[in-house]
Amino acid sequence: MNPLVLQITSRDNPQFKTLRKLAAGAGDHRVGGSVWLEGDHLLRAALARGQRLALLVVSEENWPQAQMEFGLAATKIMVLSKALFAALSALPAPVGLGAVVDVPPPPVLNPLAPTVVLDRLQDAGNVGAVLRCAAAFGFGQVIALKGTVALWSPKVVRAGMGAHWGLQLMESADVAAVAALRTPRLVTSSHRGFWLHEAVAQARLPMPCAWVLGHEGQGVQPESEALADLAVRIAQPGGEESLNVATAAAICLHASATCCWASGSGRGG
Image 1 (spheres, rainbow, N blue to C red):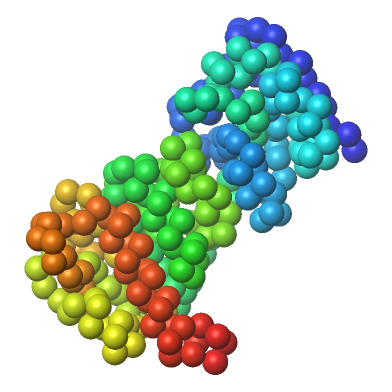
Image 2: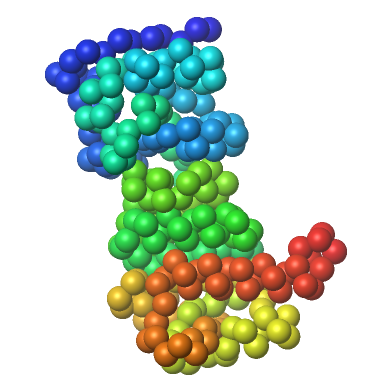
């Protein structure tokens, strides 16, 4: 069936107003059940994971090419003038291509899955970067505890660069979700625990496991830390007090993946 095509020319159009609120992150996606994607990369990442575009949004100048590439993947298409798309876009240089996609339903917790726990992370860029690391290094389940920025907010989705579609994402979880995990729970610490590089050298990081990453300023909350099986320190010979949480996540998750590969399980052995 061919999609319905709407030509929108006015900022006062009700459908455009609704779309603009969604693109700006106004409201709660958990109520509306949809998310705004902007740019070719995010659209292709969603489609590659089997998502259908509830609404394809294109500028007039991009319409012919977008129709050929994405038209059949959309239920409905909205064509906007260049000025209207610019009013919608959150990018410094609007690309004239976006879409609305339904948010997947919340998954059921898998207590044995390699997991990343986000303990009240506040910065959308950090959260998106952590999701990319989780997807890249084989941690397919992410639990965001209450107080963490919304995982499907536009800024997190942009920073995630398509990683969302390869992950099982749980939002607004209680610490009880961490307690329900049956894999070793690891927390990062700047002052206690074993050195990460030594664990990697000896191939003794547990895998699967759950890495608990804490608030940018306050770290892991006491309730989460009390559930930890291991505390891990990252050597910083340059003398900095701490690392950005997304940087720490990249180091720790890569270390787990390295140990997994070295043990043979990364090759299916």
